[in-house]
Image (tube, rainbow, N blue to C red):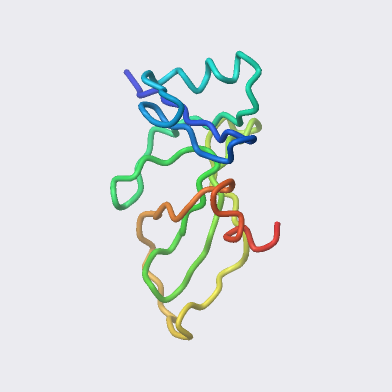
Length: 126
């Protein structure tokens, strides 16, 4: 079995997300790891191997909507859990009604709506 190993990194000083083939002339998937190893102020995030309902790759540190139906919003962060040796969704807040409607909810795939570094306002003050 083969899985795709990818990293991205949040550059703390420049306040930008470094992705493969992106900022600062990165050209390889592991450039973010090299920056980390060189002691640059970066926070590494690994690709989970999963994609959201729109085909967007899900990384550690992403903020996802667990119920992307337009009526109810339940946000969670994507984190590595050492106790279970797996990626988990950690809820940011309990269910919140959006648009004041929505009683019946059918669960759907998640949707990436941001990340904890570029979109701290989605964390609700945490």
